[in-house]
Length: 141
Image 1 (cartoon, rainbow, N blue to C red):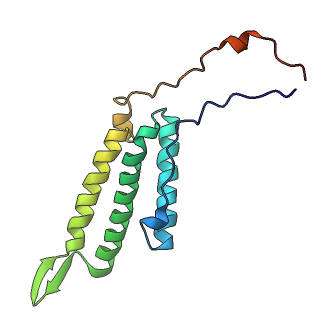
Image 2: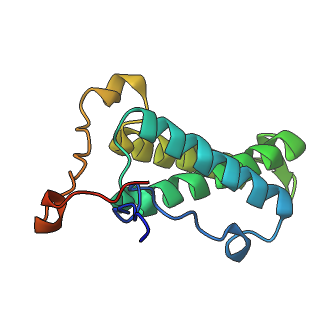
Image 3: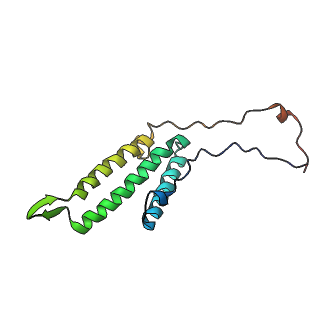
């Protein structure tokens, strides 16, 4: 007879999305995977990680990639562009500002900034329920 270990069905970690479906650039897919890992590790160490946070983490990672992409465009083209002889603000600059605000809001919801971490409740972990079979002796190895 063999000894079986109890599997509780996962550690509450949301499944990482397939970034190739969202981003065509391999560099952005790698950056997204890195952002995801950093966020999940930070939330796991703060004990705030839950499967229900998966979509919010995905939105945060997408916002960070959009922010990085827009920052690169502003660095390349400048914050002010000349369009038909008139100096105008680069549209990518507004995208930088909006994605930064979006990311800051989602980070606050997830409790990632240290100032907000105390306001976020920890996720309770379910304890394994005892069954009638737990009262029987275990096989000797």
